Amino acid sequence: MAKPSDATVVNGYATLLHRGQTCRRVRHRLPNLIAVDFYLHGDVLGVARKLNGDTL
Image (tube, rainbow, N blue to C red; front, side):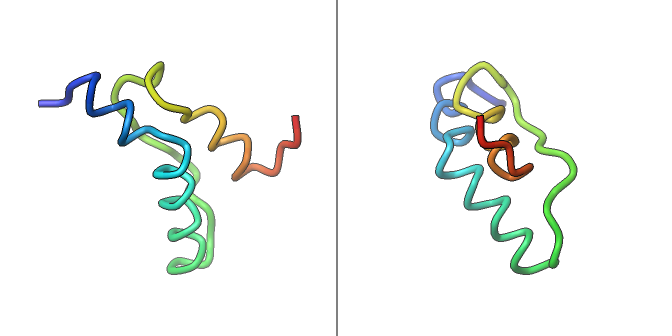
């Protein structure tokens, strides 16, 4: 069962960015979906912006 306390780590910027970059390296494409539980915990939106090339 997913727990918010785990989501803070699992949804963290470094963790999600590493997964997205691994997808690009292994599959030669970026993920088009980042599925997480408890999106308010961690930084899923920041990672999505980074992977999409947003410089804001």
